[in-house]
Picture: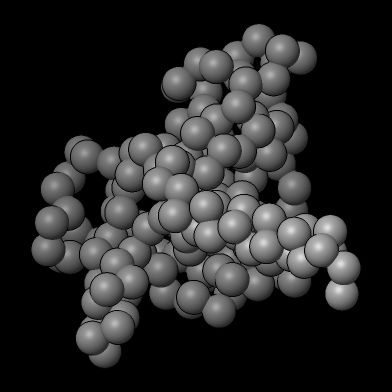
Length: 148
């Protein structure tokens, strides 16, 4: 193996380590706000992986669409004038979460669930992590939603 090839491998390894340590929220383009991208955000940014290491449920804590919004950076698209409007972005995230509920990957917590208060945004719970993973990785396709 030549020095150039070794250097390229070391550089790629360093990029991988840097990317894994990056604490910034992942970036999603406005036109790509859909159930698949939101499934990826939920899998990578939501839940409590520490609980899983201790044999407890990673998904024990429900989350809202606002939690998902806080854990993603949306890249506006100049073709869509509303692509930097927070209300429009949140609506698209909510629509994507509703689609994930309809696919039975998520559920909406009912009013008997501790922490649920009537009138506040719904709390979502992961009920099928494998299905959520399949959606996120494109192995299970859902009906596409139009941009805008």
